[in-house]
Image (cartoon, rainbow, N blue to C red; front, top):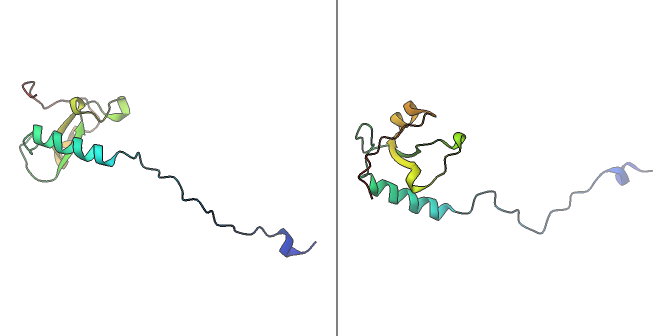
Length: 95
């Protein structure tokens, strides 16, 4: 048997690979804007208006979902400080 016969040949796929993303980027962006608006575009802990992130009150590692009721606006510093603890800085008068 010849060496060329044993060497596998590369055959490119004709089909594009399925996206690994969740496919809901627009929904997440819309939810982010809604949460920022609800929280007046400021960190609920310190009041900062820059480097804002959306934080899950109940972390994903503990089963928390990326939903309107489970999210709050925090700056990067406060979000990192909070870590994976279940802490809500929201007041309950929002709607």
